[in-house]
Structure formats: structure tokens, C-alpha cells
Length: 191
Figure 1 (cartoon, helix red, strand yellow):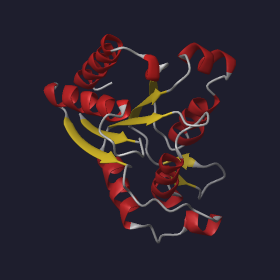
Figure 2 (tube, rainbow, N blue to C red):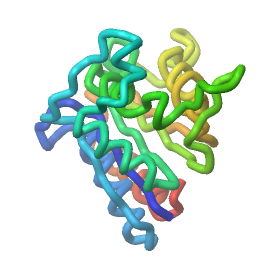
Figure 3 (tube, helix red, strand yellow):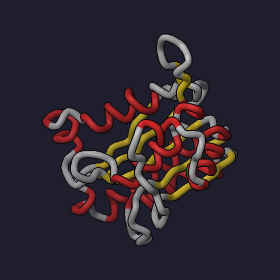
């Protein structure tokens, strides 16, 4: 399987758990015989879209063209990011907005929009400071549901699976190692 691993932690410091989770997934996928390509948002200059005209424009920045090539190549996407203020970091949102433009990801020519990225699956991996149960039940996992339904599935990507890791700042080494082992197993299976 062709797998694109997108590390969405904007901080380039290597000790970030998101970097380790992305590495573990990629390592497992390689061990499982899958073809892997990677993209990291840390250090990328990701300008925001400011109008509908920009969103619909064919003038796509070079980084977004590279991201489109990556997504177009992949059969399975893995997006790893930390939960910041209840949602993905702005850098991840900017990458998605710049990459998933209509000419690439959504056909608006008919009565209803049609996703152009059918035949791909995804896994969203989110780290957070709160307990996962609180994010799911008290906060309703609103940002994750929005990403899955209103972005990925809208573009035709499904199924979309998720892995959520909470209380990461307080997790001991054994807990972190368990999470990394889980990511390696998922990578081996291409899920």
C-alpha cells in the first residue's frame, strides 16, 4: 500500500510525541512492506487563504503542489497532530486549505459537490492534554468530527479511523511506549 504520513506538529523540537508517533507509524509501515512518503509541517511557511477567489485559484503555492502530489500518490493518509485550543494547529489547517482546493479535491461542477479523492482511506492521530473521555463526551470531539466529515469524507476519503491519546504531558515512559507500539502495529497493517 502507498501511505502518506503527515506530521502536523508545528514545533520542530524532536521530543514532541507527535513526531515519535509519526515515526513509529512509518517504521511499522515500512516493516510491513508498504511504500511510505512523509511530510512535516514544522518549519514550513504556510500562508493562510484569505478569500474564496484564492481557494478556487489554480495558482497553488509550491508546497501545496507537493502536498497534492503526495495525497494523489497515496492510498492511505495518516495525519498526526496535537489538539490546540480544541482543534488542530493553524499550520495543519492552512496546509489542508491550501492542498485540498476544488481543482484537486472537490468537483463543484454539478448540483452537488463530489469528492475527487475517492479510493483513499485515512487515520487521524491526535494527542491532547485532557483525558480522551473528556474530549469525546464533554466536548463532543467536535473538531475531530468536523475534520472527518467536513474535510476528509467530503473530499471522498473514507473510511477515516482515529487514534486519540490523552493526558500526554503526564504519561509515563511505559504508557508512551505502549502508544508507539500501537502506532507501529497500525503501520504494519496499513490501517
